[in-house]
Each structure stands twice: as C-alpha cells, then as structure tokens.
Image (cartoon, rainbow, N blue to C red):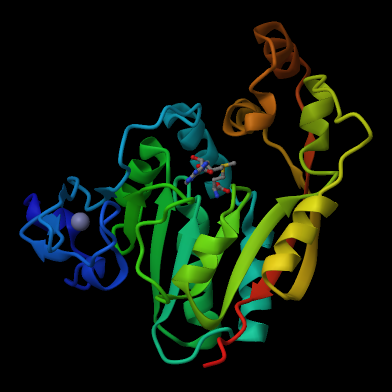
Length: 298
Ligand SMILES: C[S@@+](CC[C@H](N)C(=O)[O-])C[C@H]1O[C@@H](n2cnc3c(N)ncnc32)[C@H](O)[C@@H]1O
Ligand SMILES: [Zn+2]
C-alpha cells in the first residue's frame, strides 16, 4: 500500500481534518496540503503514516504507555466493555442529541480508540445515520494504536484542556474514564449536543483491587463530587448505572492488571502473587452521565 493510502478511509475519502480541526497555536482553521495541515499563519503539522496528527505544543510525559494501551485493547476486544458501549448507544439513541446527518462524535481521552469505534458503529446502526468519529488523547502511543486499527476516523494527540477542534462541530462528546474540561466540551458541541461521561462506581474492578491489596480510599469511595460538577456544567438528561460481572479467562488477568492506573502503585510481589492466585470473575460497575448543551439565546 502506498504511503498516501494510509490516511484514507476505506470508502476512499479522508477523515475531515479541515472541517473539524483548528490550529493549537493560533486557533485558525487548517488547510490540508499533501500530508500536512497548514493554518493561515503557516503553522504546519504533518500527518503520521496512519493519518493521525500530533497537535500538542510540547511533548507530554505520561505513564499511559504502549504496553498499557495494548493491554487495554486486548481486554476491550475480549468483549469486556460491550455492555457499556451498548448502554451508551441505547441511551444516546433515546435522547437523539443530533440533527442533520452525519452525527459527529468526539472521544476526549480516547486511548486506543475501541470505545469510539464501537459506539460510532452501534449508533450508525441504531439510528440509520452516518457517523463521523474523532478522538483526542494526550498519550501518543494510544493515538498511534487507534489510527492503525480504525483508519476511518480522525485521531489526534492533544490536550483535553486545550482541544485542537473548531467551535460547535460535534453532536456528542464522549469522555470515558478520563479527565474532563467542561468549558472545552461546551465550546466544541453544537447547541443541543450531549456530553456522555463515564465514571467508575464503588464496585468497579473490586476483585482486582482485593487480590492486589489496593488500599480503599479513606472514608470510602464516592463520585458524588464529580457528578455534581458535571451536572453544574450540563443539565443532566440521564444517568444510567451499568453493573455486571464478567467471567475472566486466566490469560486475561495479566492484561487486566496492566491496563489500569489502579495498579500503578502495586509492588511486583503483589502482582505475581495475584497472577498465581488468579481471578475467576470481575465486576464492572460504571455510571453513564449524559448532559445536554442548552441552546444559546441570541
Ligand atoms: C483510564 S484511560 C481511558 C482511556 C479510554 N477512554 C478507555 O476507556 O479505554 C484515561 C485516558 O485519559 C488520557 N488523558 C489524561 N489526561 C489527558 C489530557 N489532559 N488530555 C487528553 N487525554 C488525557 C490518558 O492518556 C488516557 O488515555
Ligand atoms: Zn496557526
């Protein structure tokens, strides 16, 4: 395959870089010239081999590395989070925070891209409307994996706090187990659009925490503050709790330990102890918060 074809969608079209992105330095829109995005002030960013674009001012050091995202991808592809994405599709299809086709989705903190790809495909089927997906993450290793696996979508390295996307371009902003910036989300959403935020509940991966002896938060786990903050930025249209238990194949315990920041402080001894003991089942316990951007009065 030639270099050029790597950034093309399977239907022969390229992701809509010019329609969606803006320059992270001067906020002007881009023009695509060959394989470079260039703004009117001549700031220039090249597309990678797989069509991703790096739009972060300076390199960012992160503990989210290639090994973590590969582990996350393995867990995702095992079907671990399918009930979550199914519930998101169902809730969004019920609210319909979109107007004309195509539906544009942004995943802020997209990691290796699985959730956006599955939700965009599910929504396309559920409401028989074309979808366009874009993902942004500060970790370039995640974005590289996403671009390679899902070339139909637009992937970029960028900061949620200063997103390199144009105003009012998206119907839906997904924000799954990732940090948020509600001002940026509101700026990028169309009026009437929705933010879909996924937050952990108390039972999330509890068996993993137990087998690794991860200390519980003092005073017990609560995400009420996070939910209050969300609801003060976007009137809450829906809150859906998704709780289920997944039988765990022995070969998935290692990637499960590697995929989550929950285990970052855990010693090697605890990890190998856990691998010896094994885990037969694991709980997924999450809440989906859906908030709407209210229409601006003129
Ligand atoms: C727990 S992971 C979740 C990834 C993905 N949403 C998923 O559920 O598989 C959190 C993600 O947030 C990203 N992240 C953290 N801070 C960020 C920032 N300031 N801007 C963009 N992404 C960020 C990390 O790189 C990481 O991919
Ligand atoms: Zn510029």
